[in-house]
Length: 81
Length: 81
Image (cartoon, rainbow over all chains, first blue to last red; front, top):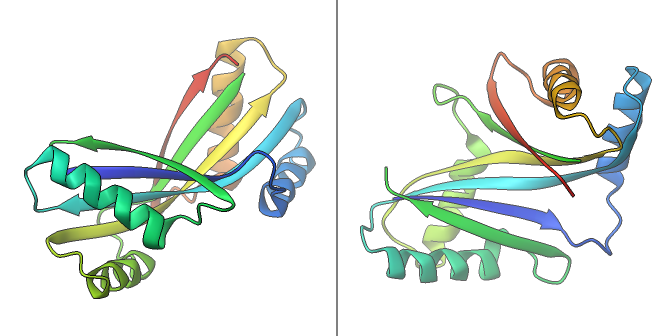
């Protein structure tokens, strides 16, 4: 089973990395960018076959290590290989 | 219009950051992890309303700045706000 975890900064948190990328894109000639935000994408391949157990495990991993719930939001999708 | 861009290392490229996260998760007691890979998630809010133009722009941004096509794969989704 493969879990894809999407982690992004909360809307209220400023994102200097995103701002730098926005400026870089503008200097390449791209106009009309309202906002750029950078997040993380974590792909975990699990040996587990049980979807419910996997969901609980992945949620625990996000809370304990992968995301910082104070400043980041996350969601994840599980799919069969 | 919002573009969500998912960038991940190609399968043939080793991912030391992912390996470190895998070890960290294992030391927290999570067993049965076959693989962990870390990628980037870029969210761009565009003023443009035209989907086709937006698609071409985003693809250009990925090729020129956001992704490194030699070692990374990317795909993106466009959605209305």
